[in-house]
Image 1: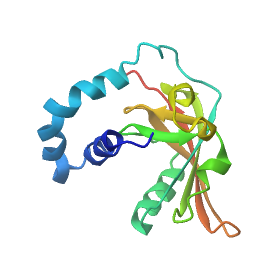
Image 2 (image 1 turned 90 degrees about the horizontal axis):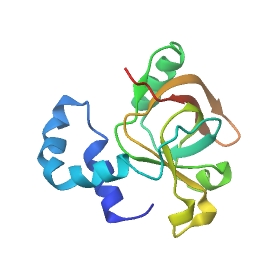
Image 3 (image 1 turned 30 degrees about the horizontal axis):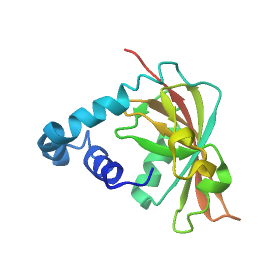
Length: 161
């Protein structure tokens, strides 16, 4: 999902929960909020997704990676996605980004995701969109010396409490 709106949404939403950046999201709610609500309340996606594995790469700092390492030591601790998060069902697609130093492998126990393949300009990317608020635990962490990537295994689970 490559668009200016997707990039702006993520730029604005990712820091949610960080008190230093709280005002950014609050200042954009009137503009971006209605669009977020339409995406999140997708009438075509009313069922929980289960049993899928998704892949996403990223470029994280050592400090960010250490947070995931610590979370892997406490697999009962939940975190959540703060923004719409694009992933692929195909690990080869996700690994095409050479500047990435992290590969997330996400098993979906039960979460709201949107299959974007039918509406994507790039259907071969097998893209799925994880909605904000989906929770995850870090199952494990490893460093792949062959790929020279940090591999972080997540379990995604929608929490309703």
